[in-house]
Image (cartoon, rainbow, N blue to C red; front, side):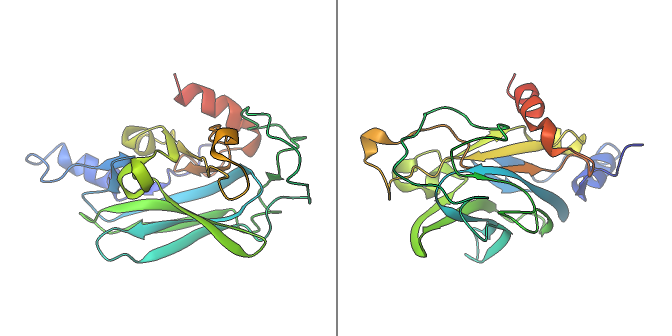
Length: 217
């Protein structure tokens, strides 16, 4: 039996919209921003992380600047590893024996499933705030324009329609690692912090690789 879809409000708005006039606002979900034309509750699930930083994923209201932390790492990875080991420059997603500072739900992130209510017609973005050995090193945004040099640090796999029909989406972050390595040695694998957005409550962690492949086609 399928669980309930995890995008309340937006789904109702779509249904009502089919019987009413043209929408006054459009829903946004991507690197240009996050905005819904009705109050909308969205569920977020931590999938995994692969990086030496300890990070917090959250939502920022771009109109007020208020940040709301959602998924919080209590340590950089499931087990301690040395930063002296060079990056493989490959995507480690779904590799349970990863040597790239693997963090998993229930371990690195004790509370891996949360909800957030987005207010209608309000512009938001996601953020990833990271530290290393207790020292702040990065504050990155899902909106390119908020990052230095408008650099893309979050990759969306799935759009608003994927959320509304219950398929869900992925947000894959790349934290640059610039606090630890030179620019020439940085990777761009977008596997440093991965979040499942929407979908269904029974979306299994071990199917993330299959889900990732299907949404990137």
